[in-house]
Image 1 (cartoon, rainbow, N blue to C red):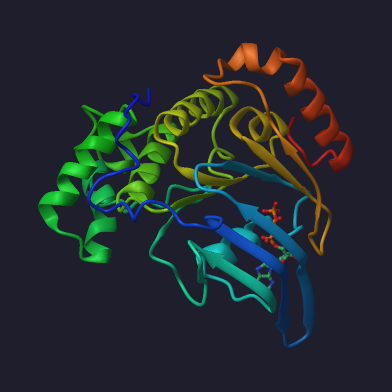
Image 2: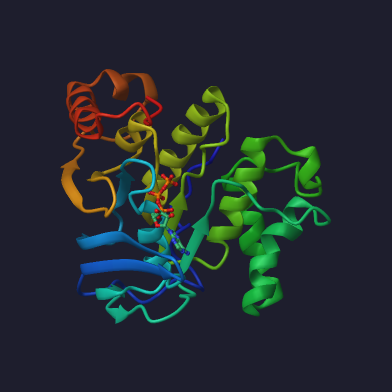
Length: 276
Ligand SMILES: Nc1ncnc2c1ncn2[C@@H]1O[C@H](COP(=O)(O)OP(=O)(O)OP(=O)(O)O)[C@@H](O)[C@H]1O
């Protein structure tokens, strides 16, 4: 289980105090993919301001551009129009100040859990001693203690995602971007991971943007939930989720705000492509 730790968002790699503006600013964003025989307009006129410490969930029909939005924020996909900035600086290429967790953990088969986490430090040329200390801190926070030397094939799907989360957080990114991170897990493990991620966020106050197909996950985890239209994706509605923390899973799901918001999101999505 993810342990509480108040210093996880601070320390040697953390940025200065906090930006004066939003942590992430997206305005008038358009993304069109052009290939030889096809033009796909993925995103249209997206405006989204994300403050430091917010937990934003993004829900929307399949193919509406959710992953594209995350990739543009990370600088992995170029905007066709509009502006995106992170901590006040324009995103013009891959950003080092984000952490990314994908649906598949994508661990290196030949490295144990700890060495997979440390791979992030090697890629970035971070000081070895600092990285080892940080990795151990994250291993403890995510309940991986005792599994440091386990190889990926020896880890359950949930544990592999914990390793992937540790790897994404190693360099103390300003923003954690998560693209359907629990989509491949069974329902029970997914619920456990939800509870643990929520605790981690409550303890650290990190800024998170999570793409999910699960309405329950979108509402339980987030402080604000963004709903997108079918492609080209636009933001159709946003919900501030006022269920107070710490959120116990069952209590939160029965909370009138949860039920109201989840019901409205389901209505907006109006689609069987949403898991729950
Ligand atoms: N690199 C690319 N080149 C061409 N088209 C792309 C590229 N990346 C995404 N697309 C197209 O852009 C649209 C949006 O894709 P994206 O993966 O962002 O949607 P999504 O909402 O994350 O989908 P899903 O929920 O199914 O994962 C899709 O039609 C997809 O085919």
